[in-house]
Length: 208
Image (cartoon, rainbow, N blue to C red):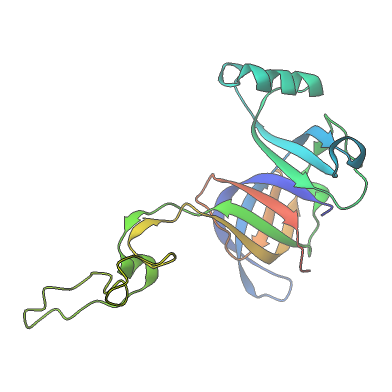
């Protein structure tokens, strides 16, 4: 990986391209991010950088983290993320990464946390069909049989009611439609995971 940046999902809208076609796009406020730590093959065994996004209040930062930021000579940041690099590390602590790291037409992967929907039944969570609603069935929205008779256990991976959403999801090969360097905005074709104002990671696509 060569390029990555943290951003905040603003929402979705639609724009017209040069051919007059209507495109659904997601607006992301990306960066500016600051390099907090630089890791090299010689010192750490791999090449990576730790980037930070959004200023944090000093009274909300623990003492170990304060020392971590003071070592890099930067102000405390709220979100930190480590990004692996393929080649030799060209970044230094304190260096700024802006939205212009990506350009129109680039293919990127976006990682975010999906919207949490609370506890859900098997029909809503997994798309199960319901039971008969008439003739005294008394079994309408249950998950059904859990296994063969005599097994006396629930097999791992069985689809059952439980917490729905709130998972880390990566959408691959999304196209950058427009980059606004003045307002730090990236317009990406299609939808991305996460609620509005949630933090997402934009990375160079691994399958482009």
